[in-house]
Length: 274
Image (tube, rainbow, N blue to C red; front, top):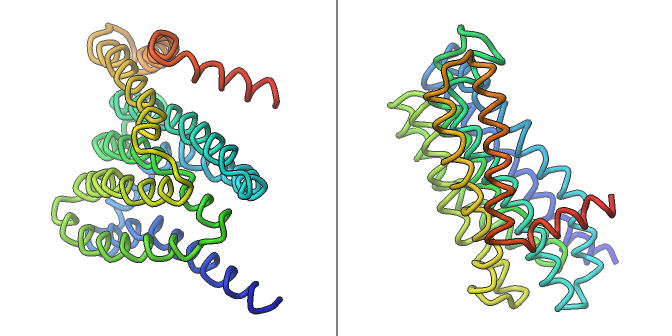
């Protein structure tokens, strides 16, 4: 009935609006407190992780939400599906985020030109931000799927209450301060987002940690493989970028094969279904 629709629809819509505000709040603070030139550099720095990582999760969200909804009355299936989704998305997000942070010194001159070099430090920090944010993905879709969208609203309100003053204070340190504040809060909010989510569906903490551990193993492998290429290979920025991406990809695949082969099996299964 109408009352039931409103009880679900209003907090669901409110959660979406709050998420959008949180996502764009840093632009507002940079533009108002630091200036238009800084906003241009920050926007460019944010654009790369947004395109490569964050937008991917928005697309995946349109698929996972209906899948969670179908499984809401099958607890074992819901838990298994949620953990698999978090595992795959966090592996991709952390590896790509670490990779962006590492290749930032060559990616900016190779892809954007030398006029955008001041964006490099912020890009490195925002790569870390996108990687950490990927560990918390899926929780909002899960809350809605099990009929509890109000949780998203409360978590978003708390995040907004912390984010705004933190961004205002860190704006004293320019766009780099803003970027690292975003990364720090993304890491901080993984705990409440996923902590509540796994409690709602009854996932043990140890099992959840086992699901996200491959992401950090993979991220470390990407870091160790790509960083020496970026800083020591005697080649052009574009050549170092391409070699670093290849080295990072191979290191990620090798690390997962040794420590978490189930993740590679999940990837093959997903691609096969696609």
